[in-house]
Amino acid sequence: MMGWKREKFICVKFRGRLANQMFDYAFLYAFAQKKGLSMIVPPSDLTKAFGIQPKTGDQYGFSRYMCWCFWTIDDKWNCAYDTSFEDLEKNTDLSFRGFFQSWKYWKDYDADLRKIFVFQDDIKEKARSYMRKILKETGKKPLQGSVLVGIHVRRGDQLASKELSYGKIVATEGYLNNSMNYFRQKFKDVLFVVISDDTPWTSNALRKFKDVYIVTGNSGEVDMCLLTMTNHTIMSVGTFGWFIGWMTQGIVIYYKNVARPGSGYEWEFGPGIQDHFLPHWIGME
Image (cartoon, rainbow, N blue to C red; front, side):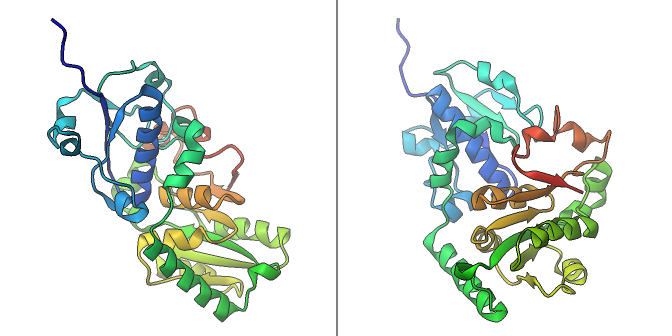
């Protein structure tokens, strides 16, 4: 007796905030394409920011909790590429749990994802309005040669005792100075547009420079959209800055001392940070 034939599904347990969800979605999309599976996408910050249509089990005519019934595969390294996933069979239900923060999972679908990760019109308009404010106040003219460099400074939760003991490291003031000087030496007319979850520290470190503009008062998705309107990116640590760099597509500088040697967090990068950071990006300290 033949069994009931139906389409097969792929699920990922979305975790964290917007940028973490972007990594999960990119992984989900790539493996849905590779394995010929239908995606389950729950409503989230991700679907609101980019207009991605949620796709739950009940929309396919099944239970919205169907993913709970599938065997769940855990990500071995949150920040590295696990080759064993390539050996998973096609035409079988798959469910994953993890962060999947390696560009290697979806390198063949980069162009597709750039068309998907496009901010909603209301977010873009808020970001454009703020950019117009920045240019008016600073007198910078991108069409006449001014170069805008977006900087994301993440500290906040990274300074929690459990995060520090796990091996996470925040970018230093020295790193910011070194990376900013790289662009000052490369371009004659530069403006650094800065967002941070620790505005007091960032202001103390950077406001002394006349070529710095510190942004305040926006939601996370508007801040991300705003920095993708710059030409180049300086990221500190975390996935939020990672995706700003990826979406902007200019020169990207990242803090290469991202994990304490020998720590649990260093282990998450598996064979090394090359699985996480794109090969043409520039690591500094």
